[in-house]
Image (cartoon, rainbow, N blue to C red; front, side, top):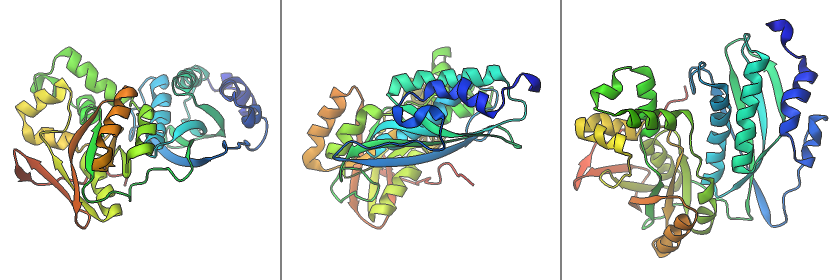
Length: 331
């Protein structure tokens, strides 16, 4: 009930101040945080906004919603080779929010703060007239002049991707279509896997050091493998060539590939993977693979960078395939 909801300053003290454990956050008792980066490091800042029933389902567990909002930002930091330090939270609460919902939301944040060694530095909370909206600004550190951008790819680089691709998009399809799993012969464990990959991204923060040490260019795969490859290609003024036979996929996606190759290709470009796409110079390939392995992060070589003008070329079985680079559209 609305009468059970704490007022603004009580809300901050009860729910968010316990998450603000860094001394620079001043216990959320001031108008701004104060943070001094370590000597020899640059700051990396990123912001993602998420809206109910656009980027997540309003009926999802509040713990999962909170963790997804934080994790998609940590994925951006990882792609820059940065380690997370803190974040700012903007929260537009729906008109029907409850103290119990907010307590669970903060429990999700607390769990991921511990998992990823990051703390809340501040933020703002308002009433939203159009459903739940979440804005996270994440701040990380990277050794000076070592941030990995999307515009550094060079002809001759090897193209790598972490983890597996397509699971998040398949999970969303399964949420929207009750017959999706049966149509592609997915077992219960397959369905559970893709649903979990959509609900809870796995930001590759452990790959940050290997990227910073060895990659010419990188970005996280959020809008879709092909769309994000094109972002790198355009920014770097090169072409990216991807062998679809090499793209790593889960057993669930493997079944979809066998049943319907066209649907499978669409899922590879569907987004919500939050893996890392990286361009690595040939001379650093072995060191990059060793660094990724030592960090416990699987990476797979899926193609190469070539001289060009911002195109993405797809191949399967040695033959060219039409490149669906649209990916997720924010508008």
